[in-house]
Length: 422
Image 1: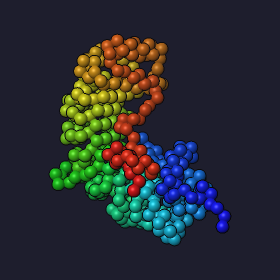
Image 2 (image 1 turned 30 degrees about the vertical axis):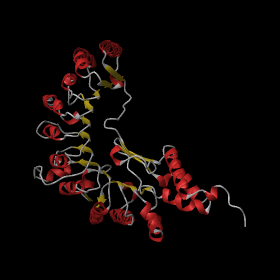
Image 3 (image 1 turned 180 degrees about the vertical axis):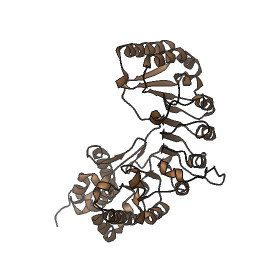
Image 4 (image 1 turned 90 degrees about the vertical axis):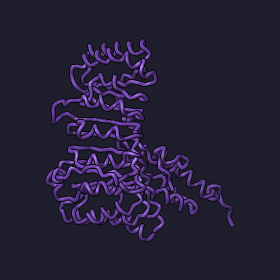
């Protein structure tokens, strides 16, 4: 009997660790090896060719390599029909799948009938996976709506990204969209911690104010919202008030105290917040409310705001425990803004000695005079002992800190925003 090689005698636990390392190292190398959004990311293990090769290496490697290969799938590229056949033959691989991406694309089929068939196939494939914890999914056809609702209801989701992009307004009318009631129902899932969704103009047909209800609660710790309308925003944020630690809002509608600001003091554990208001469709609005609200956010540690929602004097209203504020300027007339910063920054040194001010500017607005003014601001801050970071166009997107899902790092608990591979 031939003697087994060292590779053939490695224990399964060690092989799992090795393939975990392989995934982490190769995910950024492969073009589709990582699903990456501004506030969440995870490895797409089905795109890691080395895992497929490892599964063919020897019999002892096959099972752990296959489990890692099927841990995360992307149905935008993986063949759903083949996957479904595989899952039906190998339920253990369906159970191994913990993350999935599916975004129906209008260029994938020529007719609505074929789009319907494709959508139903994709959702029936996902329905075989009973352990999906992380899901990014786009709009579906109307005939697949019930299947989508069933998937969201049954899956033990920890992270959910709901996307609405790539379709015209008229096309969206032919697709199935979740209602505000369903947004709130999903948010109540006991396992859910990360929720990203979009409040689009289609929701304007819902006339209810969706006032907060005291008996509704959500365990969400990170909420990322893109909004053109504030329908059900107050109810969703209030539901998660007791647990919400990270909040990211991208708004194309004016934010005010009445539709947003009044919610912030009700978030007792909020630590990181990003507010980006795009003023393309409206003039600058009254921003006095944010200066009134910020001092009440006693747990806030990191803050990102843009010039469209706050003036430079906002640094005079920072909460007491803030460690980092990023102020992003993309407008014109930069020099007066820089000078205003220089005038008010002296007050920051005494009030918040450990706070760092990051001043981010659009490189398209740079001129020789503005470069000189930025240099002077940096020198002033250093002289006053103020921690300053002049960010000349390289956007960090680290507020709030990205939720990075790993299928390997088992030692870190979920409250560190790295989800455990069970």
